[in-house]
Length: 407
Ligand code: LLP
Image (cartoon, rainbow, N blue to C red; front, side, top):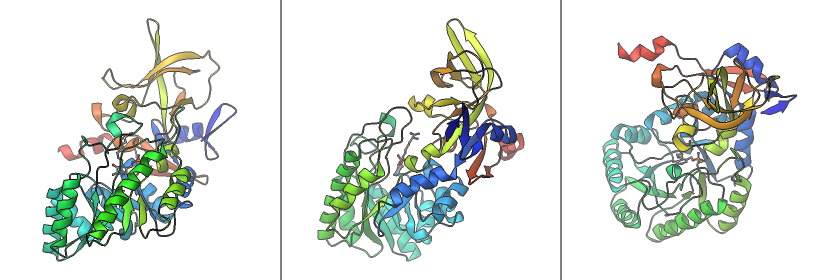
């Protein structure tokens, strides 16, 4: 994404040309940006380590394909995310399955497909994995996802590694599962995993969690388990406004230092930092509305398309696609959804008129995947720009799609 002569470009294509051809609202992604972010991890890890992209950040099959071709593995949190990865040609031996609520069928699917590991989050889940493994007569490699009780420097809704969160196992459960898994040949504990949260700018917090999982892995190894991997989750942040972004190089240089004399392989599960900066949401200004002192730009995208501002008070930069020759004014930018919370940005200085286009920046992660059909709004079309070629990677929904399952 770049601006030349007050015009926004994605790779070398003027965004205005794309919106004229594909309409609005529109999600646009840059393949080059995704590749660049992936390589910033890849070039810092050792051959034996694994990047398992967190599919939840953006699960479009075309983006998964792109990442699979670059050698990425995947972190999934549902059977359907797993199926997406398989469709995208992922290497099954590079897939890990996270999440606290895996169903019977999801665990069965994972075991049948011999993925790298199922990350156990509770004693009940261990028992279920054991039961299914026995039934299928297939041993299953598992991770114990632990809870290191580390507080992060991010929004409280996206921290996951503190004692009061629903994620991870406490030490009592770790010890119990360790004992129970030794009694059979069906559940092998090969990994200790954790993920402490998202949008983290301080790499030291993740390094602290590495120390924590490593201590537990050493303890489990001493107890007779064959521990191979330390999974330190995802979580590095990007720069939405003026915050520090996390730096894979700083993180991984220190990870390599810490593991110099150790046999453990590292698994990383980055999501936001791989796809976050690659995407923009294009939207049209429908109306300029004045209400007392306030000026609103009413746009054709809503909280159903990008829920992060309403849900987390998240800040996304907003840029004019082309700058109009009008005075700069301060606007709140609101969508068409019938909710007071449907304001996607506040107090933004813009030169705009009705029918101009705006771009919400850095929506590649947790943008389209969190969209909904609220107010019976159709989800936007999505396109991927790759070396001057443009591909529709998700078609625009139609009214017929919207009601297809209701009749
Ligand atoms: N691994 C696990 C087990 C996770 O739960 C997550 C994210 C990740 C990896 C990837 O984390 P990342 O590298 O993307 O920070 N919807 C929120 C973010 C929720 C993150 C949930 N877990 C947002 O829009 O900010």
